Length: 508
Image (cartoon, rainbow, N blue to C red; front, side):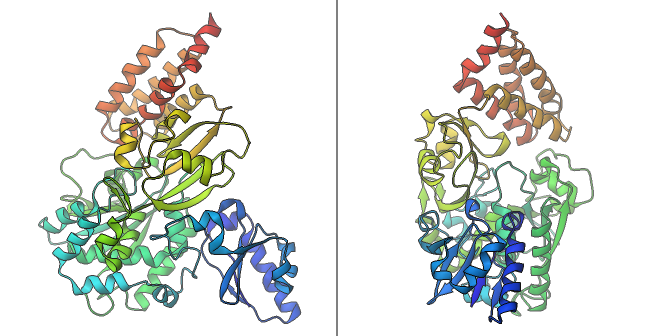
């Protein structure tokens, strides 16, 4: 019997290690031959710990499980009360279009042979046969854009670095995933690390870089350990090192651990941190593509952007471009969290409406109360009311509605949420996380908290002041931390004005 039990941080937090150990102990006591595979999570949080067993060549799911469920599961899986049927037929999985996450939850993340058997390394092998210009053109034509927040075209960034003069160039993976309600980077690194390694190798090959760095926040110990072991295996097997697969130029990787500063998710702050400096924002120009890490041309891409490259290189730009909406091509890994029945990772083509995501895929609120607001794009994303739920999920579409996609975290709130408090939290978050480099962010966020407290106390003059303050932060901040903080604040003021007026009325 082959039993799959995730070792992803989410599953482990919910008891997957105890479930795996109970399976081992029961199999040993009964003399049952058991092959235990610790795979990544399938991304269905409400079913973890989720175990899978192959039955007639088809994987069947069981969950959520406890250690006490294991004897009955191993003895007679067909009649187990936690049986969910074939894994791929679970509606939450069946509706997805998994390209980047195709192997996550399917294979042992540290089994390079299993990775190759599931289509891994095909993109790198094809890239090795192409000229650098052809590789970059493939990424350009695919329409792939940054998945970390800004949505900048990946191929243009690569082309800029490739054309920049310099004796040494770098590839930096931004794995400093700090947005609330986001976990796609972590899931990918813990569930399919060789995919990220392959994507970075293709990038290095394309732009002329021989070294790459993966910058991971310290709060991700499981991802750090998995990536470091995957890099060691990749070097040992000749995927990395003096040459790529024994055919291409040298390329090697190293994991660097950040201290957990939210602002280090901004690329120039990240580069300062990588260099051993304080993580503060750099003024632009020069762009990192021209003068980045150690003053050299540098590609800085998000985990999901880089991990999508192998699929594009394997299947071609046109195949990827066929998915999506408008200028938002391909797929996006939605991370559904907050007050929802079915939270987890859902990879799909751009274009679903927010209503479909919240009401259908997520199943509404876990509390059973009406949905009041959805915040998309992390703590700096706008709050959308139900009246905007028909907005299609796409970069330009969300921008037109006053929001942003960011890293595609979708956090749901029911009708008990206090939107004035949510606006205050956004300002307080910015005040705590500001690097202090620019005045609009450093002082503006502190004044923002004070101004919202005046609103709460019923000061009628505070609201115009808050609007002016947000405009100053939006236009004057050096980076998106101060520049985007007005999004959640002003969206709350715009869509729930009665909650900001209620404090004044109560004070009177």
